[in-house]
Image (cartoon, rainbow, N blue to C red; front, side, top):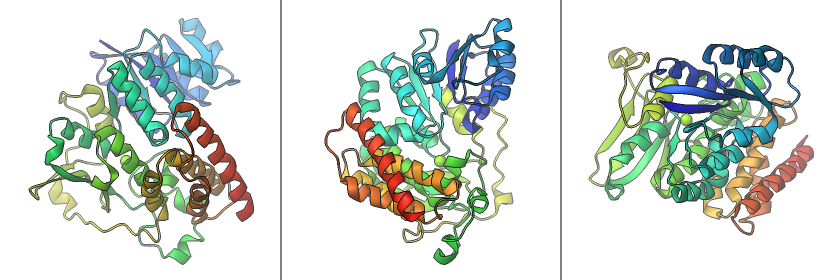
Length: 383
Ligand code: MG
């Protein structure tokens, strides 16, 4: 029996993970659930899965009254979340937290010798060098959860890296795939949140619309796969049927295809390296008919370029990329800046920061703090 802590249980990764786990309860036990403010859903999940403990954001009402009579321990706040990630009763931590909240619990879990399945991209974007080094030292496994990264990582486990020329990450292109740059300057929050394929939280949906999400995946790829970003390319693929491509030195390509369903990569990561049957609909290629591919447009989607640029700058630039992006995305969602301003904010923050000094954890947190503050100033200048 593998004992699981699920961080971010009420988000889209969290709910899908519980859906997957409900079919694998002969192999997995849900020991803890952590959520933010969605007390109603957390309680519902806890009543169903009966974890030993739950953790919720500070000051959220109603959880204690409902769950303590069931013998479920109720914890509160960020500190409890970090402690819970290192719980001795847990073997595997699934990190489905949103944005910047994910790093400390991941470090806590890895430091305590637990395998971590990571859906929270920001963790590896900001501190991939530290998280992977610690994982190596502790002998724990980092498993990616993402439609592209999970099959890619899984395939590369059985592949000699010297045989790989490059990997290609497909991107759906988001809602503004064929929108002119003038029109993109005027798009609304609702238009940007209307993703063609995936139903996800607001932060990652905007990141998908700007292609920053794909940029994050490029940065993540170097840590999960041990490949330099010069060997990681992006291609626009509207149907979201091909989830990754591996090009070998001999010119051959391997692709991973499936019906787009987030439950598949979650399932693949959980049962790795086994193959176990799922409820995911089989792919009917004849019905799909055609698969199309396009080069990404770096002019209309500068965030993708900025992610490569952050890696080229090095040091703590990726931490600033992430921090500035997060501030800019929420500023857009709150109506303070336009859609194209998101990239402008990130670009200016990166320019002002450079590589920073040092790459240890303190330097990373300082760059994160600096990036948020700087981006806030830039947002104010625009708004
Ligand atoms: Mg993805």
